[in-house]
Image (cartoon, rainbow, N blue to C red; front, side):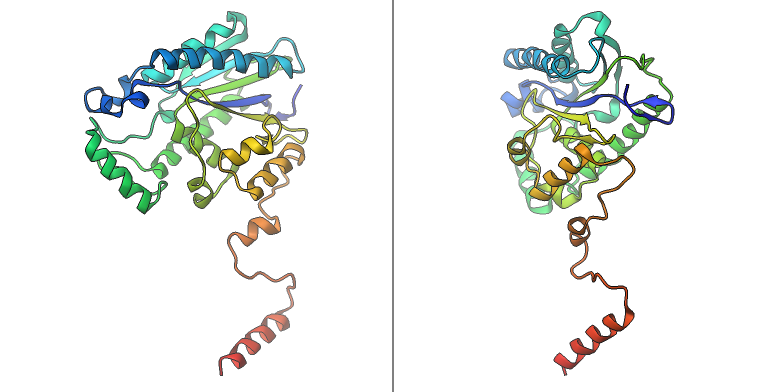
Amino acid sequence: MHREEKGGVLPKRIIVLRHGESQGNLDPGAYAVTPDHKISLTPQGIAQARLTGSRIRHVISSSSSSPDWRLYFYVSPYTRTRSTLREIARSFSKKRVIGVREECRIREQDFGNFQVQERMNAIKETRQRFGRFFYRFPEGESAADVFDRVSSFLESLWRDIDMNRLNHNPSNDLNLIIVSHGLASRVFLMRWFRWTVEQFEHLNNFGNSEFRVMQLGSGGEYSLAVHHTDKELLEWGLSPDMIADQKWRAHGCKGASNDQSPRYLEAFFDIITDSDDESVDTKDKTNSLSEHS
């Protein structure tokens, strides 16, 4: 049994997954005639999702402490994510799945309504110059907007766990699987691990049907480094400091924050002294003034 949080048993894993290849991935012109939420998977995307289901099953079954592990799914309402879920589910029997919930807050970033390809190409060039996180698409959303709704979803997810709304038997390993989209998945990880906007800007998108495994570490923290290798984390755009933090989370004690580490503080402060002696600070100011006199 895992460590309990406010009466709820923590999931063994939280797996974040992007949908399989869609018609929009294959032909961006599809968005000009089909609403984004109705874009379907390609035959290749269906095959990808089915293979991903077997891979996820292997991840869970090969390292679970209990043979009676269970799954609970959260899925974006878009056609391509629901189809991805349907194909993934072929790898699991009914007794393994304790529930599924459609969750609008993990839907794709809103790029507007029908998307004319030439106009979207120009808009995306502007986004590159402006910054991916704060740029808001005309008639649509910014990644910052997605961050706000994903934050709300996370609060609901924790309440589901704390109040055992998932009707989970605590003697079984629980695995939460979130079937979502590329940007929403990156924002989810950013929000969970408290990554900065600058760190988010360097993240690479998930491939189609690609997933990330956040696994509960020995100290009660979730970490990408329990299941994934340093090479994978680097390929996904995590910096060496971010990877070091993931390794700390794999073994660090829950409640002890890594936000006060010297490397984390240095990301926000140019100069921060080790001494709390005001005379040292006064001396530094005097020396600085004399150098400019």
